[in-house]
Length: 108
Length: 135
Image 1: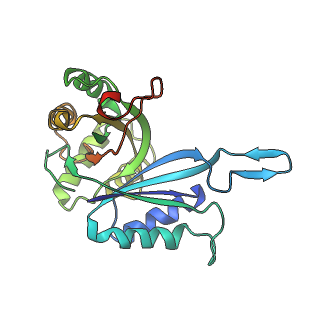
Image 2: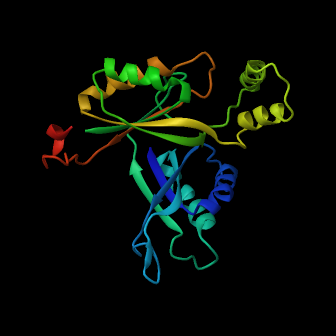
Image 3: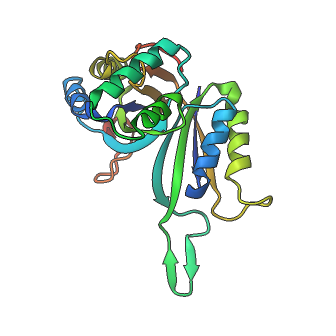
């Protein structure tokens, strides 16, 4: 099992969640976050904005569905065809165990 | 070392904190999050939840039924609390059991998920010590 954490533009969140649901990945957790990336924030003259609002979407999926999830995020979180700085990052980590609280069952 | 991520109901936060204390872990980080879960396949469970949710507030407000329906069919994200707990390997089963015990309800759905993930290293900022002793 793996955990996919995608940091995306807040304005892309609704479309991304809708498309994830269509692709069969309905379960997700969403957090509003602030952060900066490799470009060291946004600079306008002397003013630097280095706490840029983003949305963090977290999903736990079986190993074999990793590429499908990452594909959906890449497709719908990118701005335009080319993409642009600030479109976000996807992190993939391993999950050893997952439990459902209501049943106490092991597994997704 | 393991990272335990638990997504639980907002009104279970106090029970969760008490349960963690009893399980011997005092430290945690909690965030308010929005989310949705796996779609429930059993329509009878959904019907039951809809009935109880509508009965909570007897005042008939416009759009209330629509709101409840949207919560249950997955078009709307609902609020939950995300707890992040770092633990030694051998503590994980008892913590997971304590979380399940404290957060289980009669509702059959929506009680949350627990994820257990490996942690490579932990460093205490104050002293700089690493690994298990930093926890």
